[in-house]
Image (cartoon, rainbow, N blue to C red; front, side, top):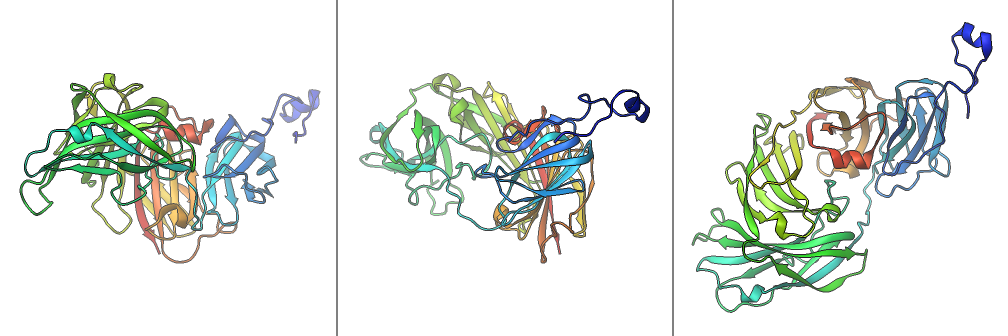
Length: 450
């Protein structure tokens, strides 16, 4: 729908733009995964509403852009037209989904992914893979009190979280783990569930030392080698057998040292994972480190086909168990030297988080590029209990909640404030999927709202 416009002297006298020269009326564009395109709202906003897990359009969702309201059509689209200029607050609600609020949105095409507010079973595309580790049974028998251990896993996608199949449990307990103790060796017959797509399957091989004691508190695991098979194309529901993982030749590993830097002072639980970036196949994340045990054996990049570098995923969190623990996460990619893996500067958590159920306020980290607030109905299960999501794309620190349009549920809520640092993020022109992949630091803090 085009805006009305004035022409000639009449237009000049009223300070109006001439026909064809004003407005930002563009063709509707569905942005896969969500996002904002065509910067500059001037009279019209195309709002698509989709399911965040499937990208399916949500028909009949109610949308409010500023004061303009309407419902999405069969394509999940509502076009808001009127006196809409510059940044707008966009609110969306749909049956069985948590309301979503975008504050400071400023693009003529907006696609908002919605989170389900009810517990559902989402099918993560996957298949069962099984096979062996070549030469496992020929390994020298371990010393007394020791064992060879192999942990079989698959490369994870670079987007964090388990909704994309990053953390699928094995088909049976410990079916992805092999042990070799003293005495004759036997084959390592492993089974895993892996995400669909083209991936790598790998085993991290380690020496397990019981320290000669019955207690496990003093046991240690030291990585010694890795075994790989890639690329493997996994099709949803199509199980595969007979996959052989080949151990890397002698001299194909190296020692990686991690510098954790200085996490936020109250975030005293600190750990990290060193991964090997395999490009389009994802990241192999298996080598865990801590500030006190910060050296680990990893594959040499030259020994793994397609390896693009090392990745460090470092975590720090408050020692709190009531569901409100603040945390800070650092993601460093493109590391080429195993001796130069460093967390660098961490992102401090937002402060001043408060809500009276009518408004919510927060003081975000000034180094963050985007801020997301999440209300959950309890502290235990994340998205399945989402009550409302609020994305802030500008310097707003206090948000009026749309209580007349989409009120919060009664009862105790967990309110979480998340700050994200993605260096190239443009709040007026971005795609959610690309944003997730470019995040380098994030931090959060939570409170209970009664």
